[in-house]
Image 1 (cartoon, helix red, strand yellow):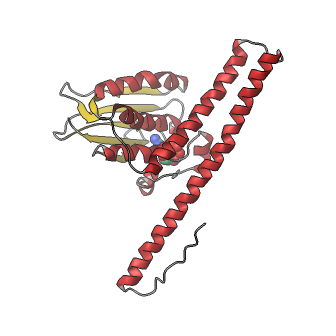
Image 2 (cartoon, helix red, strand yellow; image 1 turned 90 degrees about the horizontal axis):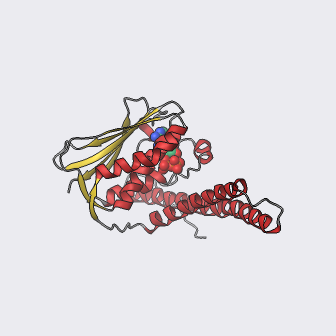
Length: 258
Ligand code: ADP
């Protein structure tokens, strides 16, 4: 590939100052490039395993080695879920790399969004004995002009992180925010380990994960929040992290009201 020669950074002239920022930018570009290559290499490698297993099981059923029953099909199904997850990762990477996000805007009712999220996450919350609660806001219009699909993605990303990092028996609270005259939004608080102040801006960076082994184990690649923040920014909104009164992290998304 390309060879970057660092510029001289000595002294405190304007040139030295410029050189320093240029060198920092170059280092950042190289870090992102390496991380991207790693994700692509890992994904290609990880795609092979489920495909091999699915192929083996189907061939086994055709040849009569495996019984053609629900239990075999369940194993095939599990592997296809793993495949979809990997494909989602690659798609996210592509969206974020292309830099610009195209929004298909319409009236989005945030009440509907939070209710849908509750229905969607209730089964996995129950499975993990997590109490998932929704605190609804008043009846005032709770709408934005936005991309329904993308905004769902933001909310689901934040909730699935909360699910991932909150231990069994914990609590996740989704709260509708509708008091501001200019903005509407929602927050998701959890009783997990929380996010240290020093990490709060970094978790929105591409490929950034606080605990690498733990995140990889649960399928994370440090892209979920990067894409969520990209989507919120494209809507002219903001996304922030605080400490939740539940003991863990509190994510607050704010969007311009319709
Ligand atoms: P990942 O796919 O690794 O979860 P994300 O971009 O979604 O990537 O999140 C980046 C990192 O932020 C995670 O690896 C995790 O360390 C941290 N994080 C995100 N959400 C939470 C949360 N609710 N509680 C604690 N840590 C979190």
